[in-house]
Length: 414
Ligand SMILES: [Zn+2]
Image (cartoon, rainbow, N blue to C red; front, side, top):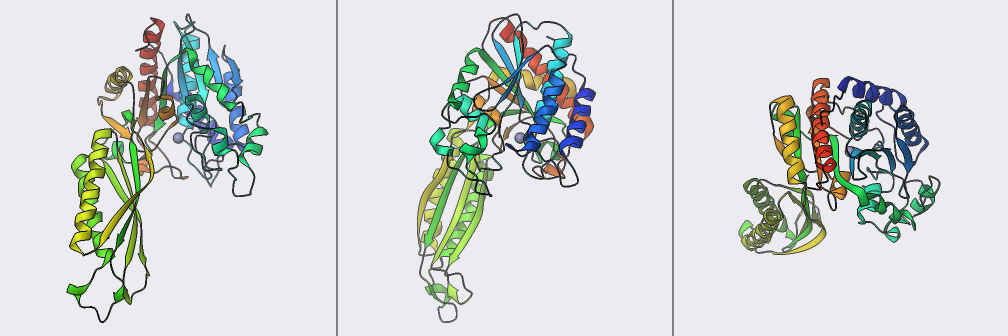
């Protein structure tokens, strides 16, 4: 179906939300606070003008259901919560863009299938450190005991704080039953990185969220006096780590992934001692599981080679790992053709950051559309996107949602 979305109305809503919950320090919509409730109150007020049923599930996610010709459902949305001192677009663009799409669909009559807006609870995890809270309950990738005793900076317990907002952790898993009729999920978001802007593009289709391999890598040599130890006699663990860092960078470039050594620590860490032990943290990401595995295997080989060259040893310890989560091929194709139709480019890219869409994609055909991010900045008050890019992104999103509704309205799940 053709959805006659009006991006100007979505942008007016975004500005109104920024006026209500923003300020000189940036957005103030930290989840499980009165400011988050204010933002939700704003959303509920807008939704009250539409023929939708609004309620909150057991995990704290807000749903607004527009009944269609069939019970099978297309879900659209994002998260209205923000990090402290966040930007005006992260999450809000997806919720208020989806609101505009829902409004336009309702204005045109009854859609062929049900269309539901979702505002996920606590996407950011800014207060308790557990991101994707609401969507993880829907996908089943979270357990009450994993999060019950998490505490915020003030020492308050997660279980107690969410209870004040009607979430009983022992019942939150029941929210997953809401996905029974859901056949597609589509999310609009800012890129939060520089790729689209650097390519001179307004919008892009997201292929999926990248997989991550994170390791602690320890190089061991021999601590020795910086003055008395001749260069050929040294077993300098830092030099091994330095060789390793360059090899890891080259591997990421070769495989078109990304790799970062975000921390390096020499022991004992003084100028007068050749470092006996150097520990680095390696983070590798790729959209393709096989490529990611190859990047890791090559990093291990490069680590051994670097250690050897400096007469050191090396050990890898895995800290964290997540598989890549690819999005739905048909929805990706639809989003690319929508982006081409509105902007002339069908560029597609992986998402480095995780999103609620990654949780949804575990069980539901999913796609995301990104708008550009000015200077690639997000999670900061400087976060911005040119208005024309926001408008194009909302139009491409509406067109892709129209495709999903057609597909689900015909009774096809893929
Ligand atoms: Zn976000």
